[in-house]
Amino acid sequence: MDSNLSWKYHISHVASKISSNIGIIARLRHFTPLITLLNIYRSLIFPYISYGLSGWGHAAKTHLDKILLLQKGLSV
Figure 1 (cartoon, helix red, strand yellow):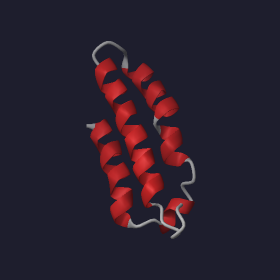
Figure 2 (figure 1 turned 90 degrees about the vertical axis):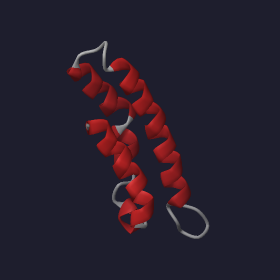
Figure 3 (figure 1 turned 45 degrees about the vertical axis):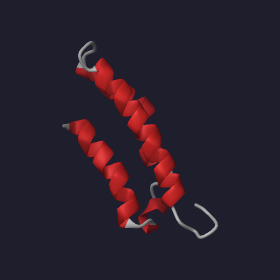
Figure 4 (figure 1 turned 135 degrees about the horizontal axis):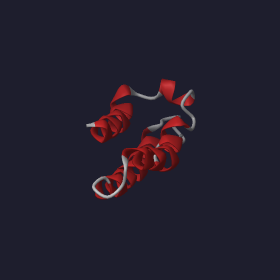
């Protein structure tokens, strides 16, 4: 949170971390089995999404949509 009690900057930071890790998974998807990709997701992406999740309930929906879109893009 910033001085205005906004989650905007934290969510932007998390979204950039998730985005770079999605790039790693996207490059590996042709060479590794699905279970390995799931383990990589659980170790590189899921902790960013789950940490502080209860506090994110007060964040604006527009900020949370960034993470939701990244997560949905990963499942396609």
